[in-house]
Each structure stands twice: as structure tokens, then as C-alpha cells.
Length: 232
Length: 227
Image 1: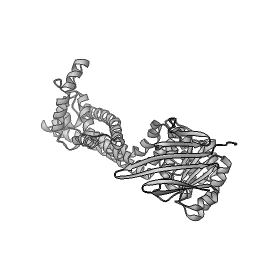
Image 2: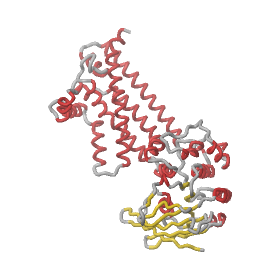
Image 3: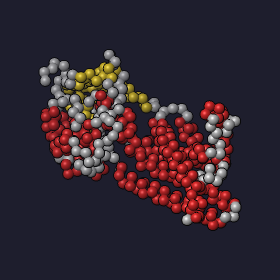
Image 4: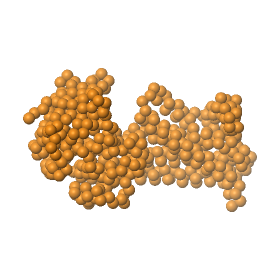
């Protein structure tokens, strides 16, 4: 795709108030490439940033543009609800649906209707992702029966099955042992290349950016304000 | 069998009242549990306390309040009488109202706790997958809270079957019309009909035991699935 605008363009300012404590997030991230890793110590607002991009919290000001689509822009009153942003989100600890099996979890986003997919449903898209991520042997199991790596794959499959226009991941490897981390980073690298959609990953591990050969942004906190520093 | 035929009208009425009250309690209790768990409004804890009160108040006190509320001389009762020609006192519908008020805490309390326990990120995940709020509730929030609500509902049904004091005050004990099983037992004992009383007591015990066993089974199977 030939496009002069940055593929990832996020400028946000938002404040959280919890009792006497105040935290302001004030960030600016741009990447001409499709991969951006956001680093920062815990408490620097990484998850808040991801939630704001996903439309789960509303920032005070700024804009979110991904792959040429404006999802939020306070200047012209654009604020798509989370359900219309078409983003695949892999949450920290994955947030799988505990009452649904792997197949139902993966197929969840294919319909926005009032009923969950049934256990015996077989959808070609769902089966395709299950096969692609090696989940076939556990397709009928529930999240609490899975290993950490399997849960992560279910979360990725669930996020990708509805054809999102960007993929956001919050510490996707933090809960895994080191050998598995490297394996799944390589899988993610291959997936992103195949899909060609922007990938934003929040992490505290520099190895994530190295394996993915991604642009990086660092968040730092000072005086209750989390700010971004972009590095080449 | 003769005994059973004689007991049937009271048993049927108890079942009818308990079914109606459970149905209303299910809808109202789930809605209230959600409101109390997620709503942010002043007086939230006061509302919770007021609705829990019928569980601890003497049934006569509750019955008195209900009588005051629905009698033709009250604002609500008077309006119902004038507009719809409906008089509630000494009808089986009054028994349903009494049973509903008494059983509501058995559903809204566990429902509130269950709704509070649903992980917000799981609901957020559903929204990022394209679901409107209503679908998130029906497909994620409610199914996760459902085992607790259902267990509460079965307790509510059993409790409604056994409701006596408040029901007697607002619905009376008219045989064949408003006489529930528990009221029939009281009347049988008062009249010295010991055989009839014993039979009715056994019928009531069996029904309540079956409901409680079902509730216990639901709880164990539900806790095995969701965690």
C-alpha cells in the first residue's frame, strides 16, 4: 500500500483521577511502518493508552489514526465506539470468555447478534484459525483447561477472526516462559507479515521489539504525567 | 388418594403463587442486582437495605405494610380500584405480591454479587469484537452471573412455597380461593384434623426438599464450569 501518511498516528491526552491521586497520560506516537512497540515501566499508562486506542476509555483530546482510518479526533468530534473500530485486541491475561470453549471463543466476533456461537457450530473461518494456530486438539476445551501459550493463541485467533484493521496486544508474552515467548514472537512476526495490518504492542521486554523488528516508543513518568519519547 | 384430592386445591394454589412470584422475582431481581452492581447513584446502599428488609422483618409487619399499600383506602389501591376496578386484598394475586417481596432478596443479592464479580475486561473484549451493549449483557455478563441467579431463584421458589405470615394477612385463607398449602396446614391444626395436617406437612416437605436438592446440584455443576 502506498500512503504518505503514517500508518500509525496516535496523539492523546487523558487524565485519570482516583481519589487524591492524579495521573495524566500525554503521548504522541507515529510510525510509518506497521509495527510499533510501546515500552514503559508499570504504572506509566501503557494499558490506559491501549484502552484509549481501542475506544474503551475516552481521552480528553488528541486523535487516533490507524492505517488511514480516523477512529478518534477530538478536533472534529469523531469518536467511534469500541465495537465499530474494527480492532483486534489481545488483552493482558487474555480475557477469554470463561463460559465458552475454544471454538466458541474464536468464533465469538463473527456475529454481533444476541446469541453466542454453539458448541457444535463449525464455521470455516473459525476452523481455519484454529488449524493455523495449532488449536485443533483443544478446540472443545474451556479456557481454564488450557496452558498459558494456548490461551494466548486463542486470544490472537479470537482477535483476528473478524478481519480487524489493526491488532493491539497488551503484554501478550508476559505470562509465558522464555522459550515459549520467543516461539510466539516469531509466530506473531509471520502473522503480521501475512495480514499486513498495523500492529501495536505494549511491553516491558526489549526482546519483543528486537524479534519483531518494530519501531519503539518509550513511556516515562514524571510528576504524575506519563509522556512518550520516540526513538529512531 | 382421597387425602390427595382434598389437598390438591391448596397445593395447586401454592404452586401457582410460587411460580408467579419466582417469575417476577427472576426478572426484577436480575434487573435490581445489575442496577445495584453497576449503577452509580445516591442511595444505592439504602435501596439494597430496604429491599433486604422483608427477609428479617416479622411477616406480620410486612403483611401490615402491604395491606396499607394495596388496600382500597391507600393511594395505589384506590387508584387500581377506581381505574381498573381491581381489588387486590384477599385475592391470590395479593399472595403473589407478598411472596415476591419476601423472595426478592434471595435473587437480587446473589445477582448483585455475581454481576460485581464479572471481569470488566471480558466485557471489554466483547465490545472490541463488535458487540453492542445489549448483546454484551446477553452473551457475556448474564451467562457468567447466571449460575448464582438460578441457585437464588430455586431458593426463592422454595421460600415462596412456604410463605405464610404476610400472605395470610393480605390474602387471607379462603379454601379453594386464597388458601395456600401452608395456610391449609395451619387451619387443619387449628381444627384438630391431625391426619390432614400430617399429610399436608409431608407434601410440603417433599416439594421443598426436591427444590433444594435441585439448587444444590445446580450450584456444584455451575462452579465446575465457570472457573
